[in-house]
Length: 220
Image 1 (cartoon, rainbow, N blue to C red):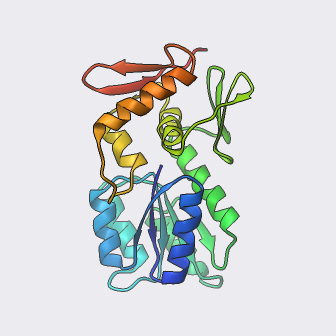
Image 2 (image 1 turned 180 degrees about the vertical axis):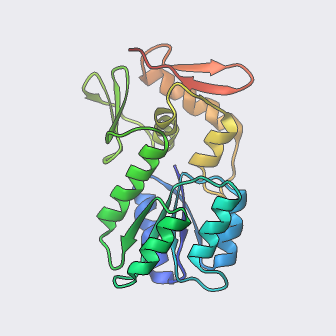
């Protein structure tokens, strides 16, 4: 899952990025409103963490421009404790949630997980596909109650497919959402990860849709 962190405080931005990376997310950062507006307009993110007090362009303006352009990624805004009007303005501008500074990283991670789940149509913290269960809180994947051992990139691929189960996911979508922007992306490695996952999952769970990508087929 791919996250954009927009924060002009370098210390907080690094803390946010480090915690999100530890939680298994692909993270990119922007420290100015202009950079944030550009990235959110041309790149695809599963969620954006957006501070409102930014240089060059404030967060409310960025958010309004994104929504006016049809960008629908979930946005979590960060506001000052006493700036209640920012919460209202942010929600009215199209934010999906807000978090008041100072905050605990555990709460931010929980809100990020919830936004990603809801955007994919999942209400529970556990996403199921037959006997395969992804616990979005811990990143643990189990099959018939047995924990599966996955590499970090295998987990990213499976988590994205689980969040978009029964939908066709293209190789380019997987590349965008499991690799950082500055990573040497190679579409051939996606096939390698899928092949490894197929050996660990029930037969037929990951279906190749010729010319389009992959679909996670979940039995009733």
